[in-house]
Image (tube, rainbow, N blue to C red):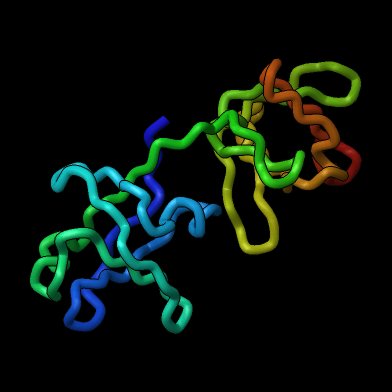
Length: 166
């Protein structure tokens, strides 16, 4: 699946490096030297250098040798072909697209709602679940989401209660 993994920012230095707004959890793999990234307007770009400077990813691309050339690519989105069903580093690694659309059930087996979004917040990811009573946010932690079955597109959730009700 073609996924947006970054965006080219401003030029850095005079040799054609660009700052990159990273939009992936696997930056070291997605932006490795030799990787080809798709763009909407400039075809394929091959990474020839990658380094972090002051916490910012800098990339150099094949054929781009000066600041003016990289400035022409500013704000260009970078895409990679990603197998969202490939196993993650941990058994509890899921791709956002694997979760969206899954049905969420309560522990008693009753349907609670459908996962509509996954918010990547600093503390933890949060599931946005559309229920018949509106949207409910549940932190995506094992204590509140004890079962995730991607193959059957089902999750078991334990919503936090407020005054004894859901």
